[in-house]
Length: 334
Image 1: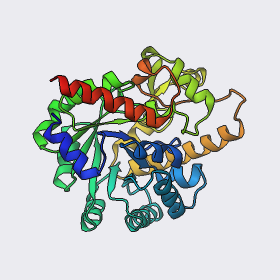
Image 2: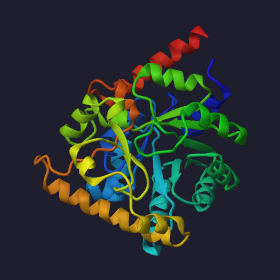
Image 3: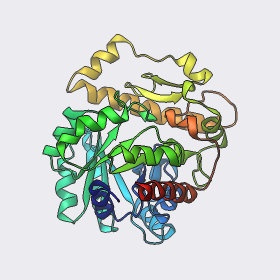
Image 4: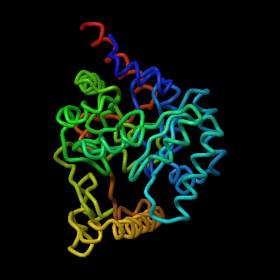
């Protein structure tokens, strides 16, 4: 049988499969988000990707996704860090417009989600918050979130430091639906992780290697060709650990930040400046690398340890349907 936690997640989100396509900068283009939702999962909009990377006017981009998804529900990622007043006001406006356009599933990251919770709950929506341990999970629960995205040590991009089983055991006492984020690359792993007791699974790396994702062919080929041993973490891209494929560029760049930046990230006020600096640096690198596309220079690709079981570039909808079929067949045998 579907577990109570899974039933709760499906009811909250409107999905038919307990699977999220996680928000990814710069990989979350409208076609990918929509394809996952159309197949019964939940695609999540990453607004910087939607507007800055893929060039869509924000409201029209949301409407495009709705059309492509055939009216199926999709979600929105609100980065709630208060790095600047201008950024905060922009995110508030983006959340308001998303609600106006019918979005009711929100994933929050990097800060206190209270204002999103209050705004979204008033409109009848739900909020899930990214966490990496019990401390942050308890804070999010106390701010009223409806569920947690448990980012483990197998995730791509920004990751946690606990394995999926240990992280679930740690967060279970909070009595919220918990979504596993990291380490799932095929249908068998999807069913296995759900079998641990998770309400759903969030995938990122697996959905980059799809026909709908507009990331470059080299990125997709790197994911298909990589194995778990090829994934390393570096602090040099954003100031905090990020899981990436170990390319020659990463080897030249290094994996740790210096003492000054480490100190900046420890202060309550200074960490916002540090994150802003690395965020702007990331935008500059993206623009530079787009200009150098095809040159083979400065290649860095975020990816998780799920690369071990990703062996082909396939349509996103096929992934959702394959995962769902395996999950249901395993569930029926229990």
